Image (tube, rainbow, N blue to C red; front, side):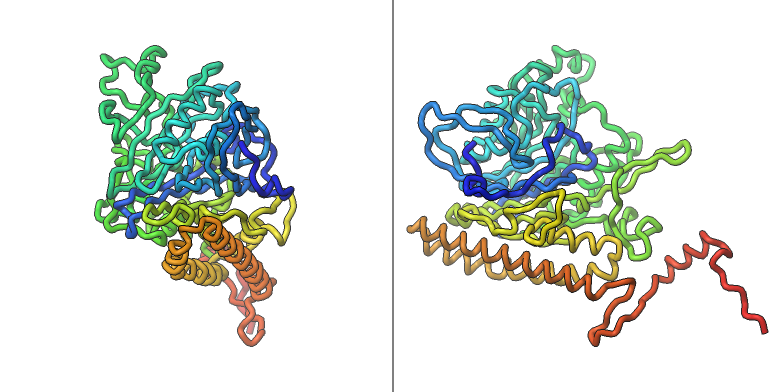
Length: 544
């Protein structure tokens, strides 16, 4: 892999935690992806999302592409950390990468799905993030990305557990589920489905693919031995099991807790995108004999970028699982539940709801691919280095040659004002425990920035099209725009943090005239306090 440009210049991008074991944080602490086909969007773009939910500070990469000499080799690293896994032959031609989208508007996201542990190969060279980054550098279409993933794993071995990759280009969106072949075995077992036009799908740390056709290569692809491999292992017998079902064979340990913390996210996106279909909750609650949700769903109306951003901001509001309600939400209706997800009390196990928006999001992205525009401006990597609910999606363009300075720095072990990750996390952490008081201020700032970015997009597109015949000028324009926008956003977010600290101090809320007032606690929460404490806090009647 050619070194990221910022590293070549001597600057740290995002300093991650030390190298992690695959699946260290558990699938329940992991990720959510939405995949939206071209005909399901208002403007004809394709979109994928990815919330990387784990306690770490990832690298936001900018990797240049180029032509390479025969026999050239490249270090294998990933976007989670800069650790060198090994060295492999370089491709003759590579494409530049910004975040997880390349200069040809190919984007890849992921969620961890686990699968049979005996199929992990600890000796494989490529973990999932290195595999994604290499594929992005070598693919000009989503189909080429699938081929690259298969070929790279076959050549160098795959070490992570089961994954679902969301893969998009300006014309197609694919969902690809894969897992290894076991210790000492190179390659991956996989199945990939093209998201039908006019539809979307969701992955939330649980395999979604069941039965699938093996004679429709335009829409379904798979490793040639996906059935024979399972039969040889004794995991599948057509006489015993009937139709081959990918998830049943390769992800057989689907339990009630796993369904609740994973499938509830799928259900919530489906219920919001297609409310007319009235998706029931029996499956994600673990009801015996309940039917799973379909792999693909047609939304009730076409979705805009703003709509898809909103789908990634979800705490199950307005449902029986609304996380802003109940004693667990505290006095200010906080929708956040800190980890772990499950706990024991007496003889029973309990489980928090696990929403789409999560406080431990390392970053959230929305990749938008727009084929009617030059690639440099057509591919937008909407990125936030924190939970999407309390932060802002910054538009990063495929054609940028430099990242905004605050997005190039950060250390998980040390707070720093010059780091976008820390600026956004400061505001988020100020908000969590006083949600109903502080979040309205955060929401106002969030909407102002994102509305501005979306309102100016048509003018940016027009300017970029006018520069299409001068690639150097187009790159300068998009770079200057990206850098200025990112630096202004982080400066505004630091100001927001200071305003929140100043206004909400010591339990008081300062009024516009500067007077500090004590708003106290909500009446319903005080009633719970009285119920729990009995007469302990009761003031006896005043004696006459």
